[in-house]
Length: 190
Image 1 (tube, rainbow, N blue to C red):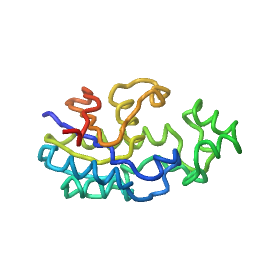
Image 2 (spheres, helix red, strand yellow):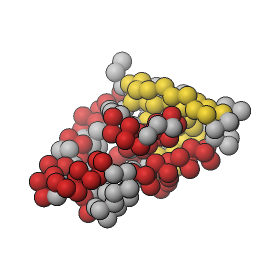
Image 3 (cartoon, rainbow, N blue to C red):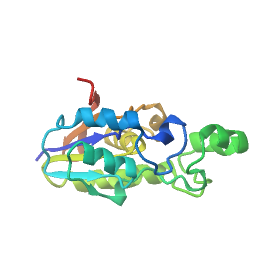
């Protein structure tokens, strides 16, 4: 029994443009134009989900997916850092930013650690793999990175070495607890 999971990163929002930890803001106008040009590019799927963020739900909607919002697929909770820029936090809390990047158990921002995020996504992948068929999920880039790290069973620090551009598809196919990974097919660039 083979399960195919297609993880679609959402179109860009204003927070990404400002290099700000997501504040659940809307898609940018450029992001909206790009996702609309990608509508119809994805294959049909038996199950479709979306991270609960505005930009993931809106991206799924614009792609023509009837995606069920799933809290379990939310991006990593950033606690007190939510809505702030990385430069702002690095200026005010440089030791905390260093710890966040070096320690997968760091949750000093009052949110979720990298390990907690990866464990949550690994649990979702394990449950998803119990049913054959194709699954589409529009998820935050950190969820895509967590899924890749979990699927390949690589050390958690590999998370920081994976770039996930807007509107790209990462494909996982697997059976028996083993996954193959296809990276970065771009949507909306016809």
